[in-house]
Length: 243
Image 1 (cartoon, one colour):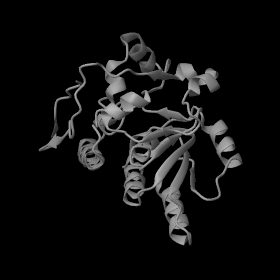
Image 2: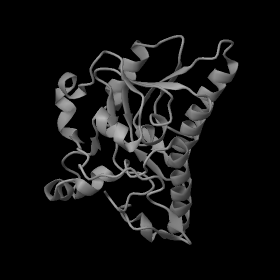
Image 3: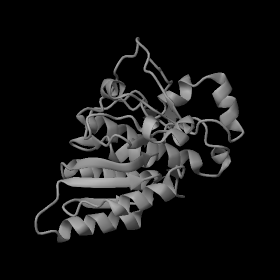
Image 4: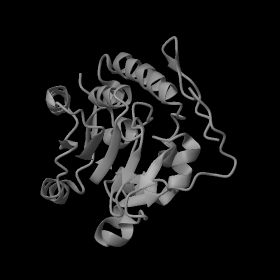
């Protein structure tokens, strides 16, 4: 079973814009995160005489396992990552946080909407073997963020603090479909070294027609940074302390 998360809100515009503004001295990743696209960028790196230190990515997300594989590869090669247009779901979960330096353009979109640790899987919990698969992914994800020294709360925090009205709308497929954080709040989670390439990050101004689709979540004052906040213990997940 493959478990995927993805976000297509910006996909058509994103691909056209990214292809028109390629940096020939960088690696480029355009499209869904999957094994084929991962292998392509791995090959591009291996075949380069002068090894690039920058991955320019534009992706609405994809497979959770392949997202972590790409993130680990980025971390192991100490690569910087620049979001050309959008980095959502598995891209925002695993690739962006794994980078050495994390570059955002003034109109780059980051978007989270859950991860292996989300609680609502829209009925997938009833599929035979799902609990075994998702718990294995959760174990892998917990270790992934521990290695990066990041609180694994950040991928699901927005889901827990959204207003009741927004949750109701989401249940029926309406309202904002994801969330993001300020640079300062990302840093509190452990996502550090975020660099604003244009001296600002204000995509809601430059893409005003899309701003209603993404909720800005503010981290509460009593939040406490915690590594391995969510763990799998003998098949049972821990309680979720959101502070």
